[in-house]
Amino acid sequence: MNKLLPIAIIAAVVIGFLGWVLPSQKITWGGTTADDWNIGGNLTVTGTSSLTGAAAFAGEVQVPSLIQGGSVTAINATSSTLTSAQICDSSILTWTTTGSDQGTTTLPSETDLITDCLDTIGDTKTILFRNIASAASTTFLVAGTDIVLLMPEATGADVVIEGQNNALITFARQAASTTVATVIELVDAD
Image (cartoon, rainbow, N blue to C red; front, side, top):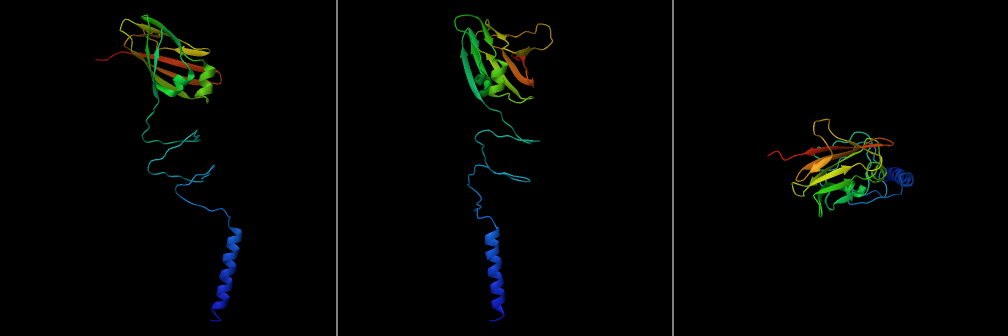
């Protein structure tokens, strides 16, 4: 019994020392929330996970299967100016004229797009613009303030989207004060 007493005293001192040295913060895993998590090394998340709010990643991010989403925004007007929210939050814009077969759609300004979603040089946003009005209708796309409007170098290329046709519009921030919108009209292939 006397031989166990020194071991018990040493164990008590070591446990007391560790309790004083180790942080008093309780660490729990699973189902927790915290204002800030800093993880050194690798983090693997399995199962269904979601991020709410802004997420910033530095370096390479690998996503094996990415599905881009956004809403479908309908526009009924002869003349309209798209907002940056309509561009940044939508994947598809459907456009139809009201009372005329010809319309004009002005793209948002560079400043608004930079404020809303193209805040970093190199950012891009692509939308599908669908002219769902009659085949006889057209909508003319107009560049917003400080937007450089580009189209393919091809015979007959223009920024007039014919009725029942679609266009891919890609907005790209190329420099601090240079944002371009590339318009490629698509026609039904069958």
